[in-house]
Image 1 (cartoon, helix red, strand yellow):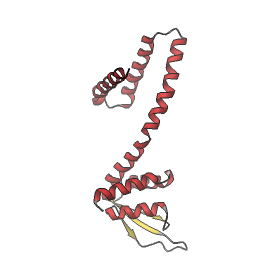
Image 2 (cartoon, one colour; image 1 turned 60 degrees about the vertical axis):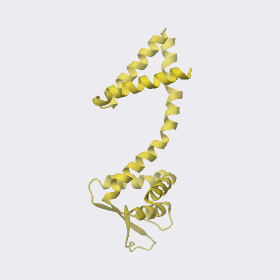
Image 3 (cartoon, helix red, strand yellow; image 1 turned 180 degrees about the vertical axis):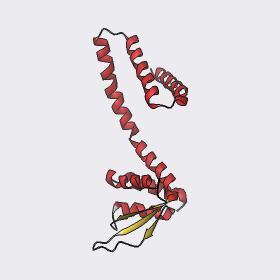
Image 4 (cartoon, helix red, strand yellow; image 1 turned 90 degrees about the vertical axis):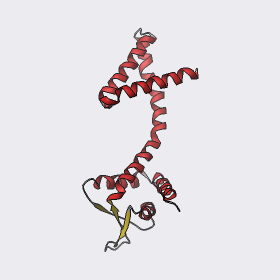
Length: 166
């Protein structure tokens, strides 16, 4: 299996993890901010064990001596070199939820803006002003200043695409 195929396999396996299991990997990435290596433990045969075994093939983890406790354990040492690719992979997986979030906001936000503006005697130009104000506040509060112009240009491009669909 090539490295790229192994990465795809790990990415797919992480996507299938429960949110609780995935949160362990997110905590590992945070721990690698201040530690050179991090030790994590799991039970053999679990979802985490299967994913972590695949990550060991990539060299991001290595297997350590099991704990001396009454239950079977598997201990993994997470290497510092795993931090960047693991962080990127987890971010990529988080982005899987963006289409659902987009669709939810697209359904809910117009209903919160347009009817109240119209009920107050507002015109379509007032709705436009409201939307422009939301964009302005979004830029001010959440987007780095140096990205404002780029984001505004991107919004204009997207509006042109929407106009062409009609």
